[in-house]
Length: 310
Image (tube, rainbow, N blue to C red; front, top):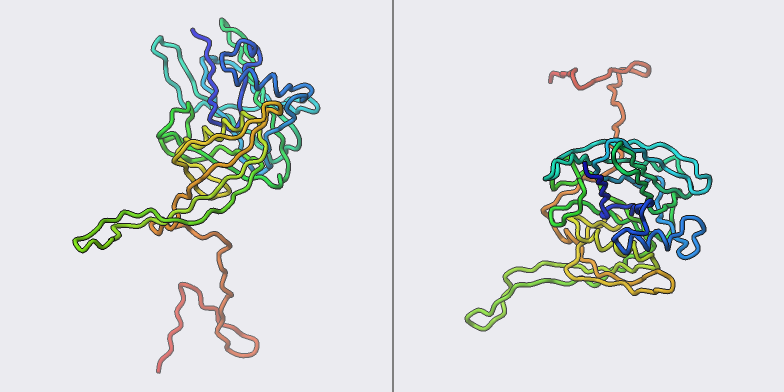
């Protein structure tokens, strides 16, 4: 049986092969380990930022039948065991069985810096350990935007977004230091010249282009944003966006960091075919009584009737 473990890059945490990282074919994976320097953070002192109310989960597909997953506290190196749930399975052309697992990480009780350790150990296969990139959990991260993305009907990302293919039941989160700069609204129009050479509008679609102004982020987060923009839905602070052109951030190689702007087009801008339910606490009406005298009351509920004759 082949030794296989694939971890999609289209998710919050980037994983690296800690056992064989020096020979990992992906240049970015190798740089991720070397630049992050888990021990002293010498080159790139950056942690992915997560708040305690954020959602964090990851998936991996493997031919290994036995493995351990641990959440590692970066300060104390204490390990907390995590559980992975199989969500579907299939076979490769050569008969190798593959199972796709989903693992949820609860952030509510966490505070500080962590990373995830995946140890694969099955008889007859090599022992391999994967580490995730480090992340830092706090009650609140000021001056950050929450990016959510999901769905892969147009991109092959090796991820299962819901039990029903090509749907989304939860999103991946990415929190970065950035701001949204609101742009000037515009209009896309289809027109023609009639017989009197008068310009006539066939249809008009109001649009709005906003700017995602990104502060310094590591190069691998630039790659994540690029992958996120290829998915079915891309949200920034609960606003749905899309892009119709490429983008590139400015690179500062000596700092291994990048900054720049991305032009985002609002989705569902001036769309009155979609109805959004309003949220809030339901209104509770006070109990009504029929006054008999100063001390007695008559309660009328939904099943009783009070009839009066003229």
